[in-house]
Length: 256
Image 1 (cartoon, one colour):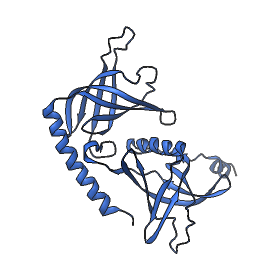
Image 2 (cartoon, rainbow, N blue to C red):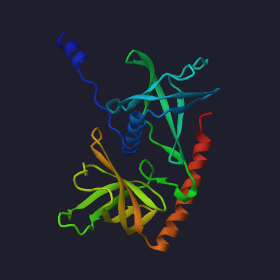
Image 3 (cartoon, rainbow, N blue to C red):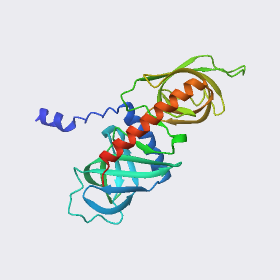
Image 4 (tube, one colour):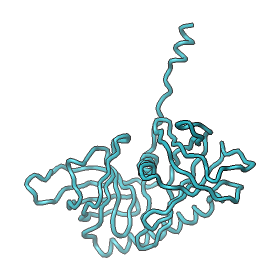
């Protein structure tokens, strides 16, 4: 009997999210808070659906999605299927392909338990296209140094990971709460190292700061204030190559 009771009381171990899943988790949190409507496609079904994210469960490596609208009446059981979730954001088309783990109830209403995927794919105009770095095979690191002339400006070096990069700026993630250390409009010196994509020192300006209390990570959006023309030209060529590969991969694996 004691062993059976111990088995019943044993807690389920928490899931460990990869850096790519942590980044996607931040995006899902935004969509949940903004009540963003998702376009949903189901393999083998020609009907288009819509839904909403209703809850996040990072400790279980999943999120909850509301029942499909119009109500799904297809012959295929959605549990076990991979669904395509899409929306438009700031001129980009964003796509997630998420595995449906189970049917469930949330606050008394039907919902679906969806696995947090490893990849967030996007199609964007080439001029502002952001190449995703987190979740890819590329290793990245960014070292930030505050160059503001303010008397109280911190002098410490901040280490983080590159989330995405475009011709005009870079997104990065740091495993600390930096809201009291950095501010929008602050100028930073940065050494960016992304495998074969970018190895350079640049001057940045912070455009947005977002902290997530669940993952305990700060996401920074920065624009380049200075970058060598030769480096920018090389970056543009490589980003175009990445865009073509990601769009090709999206079309090959698209759920329709």
